[in-house]
Length: 137
Image 1 (spheres, rainbow, N blue to C red):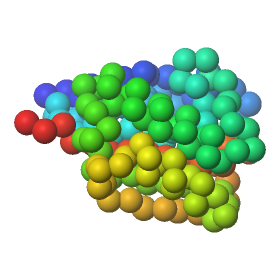
Image 2: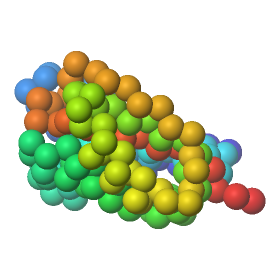
Image 3: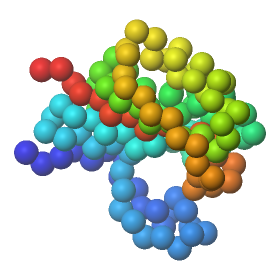
Image 4: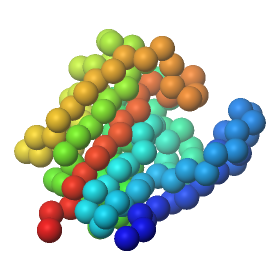
């Protein structure tokens, strides 16, 4: 079975200033049940507009909205999430960001890893959240 790749894009379009040429996608559905969601940031998936510049909670809200949307497009739900990884550019953002993620994932109980990084792909991005889900048989 071939993997399903949703919302394909090329980095030459999304990051023209970085002179990249990588074929990527927002979601991969593997073997029909495992769903891998690319790290999501405070950016509208349809317009590429940045959301919540300077506000880590607002960026986390947009990232979780994106994850919810992408999971539904892949035939999954938030409650199918098994793992999240949260990247922060400042440890002081943790409380605000985790409150947002906790509200979206209340009762889901995924494993979670938090990482503080020096920067994300664009300077205005303060938080990035990736998710893995497994669709039950």
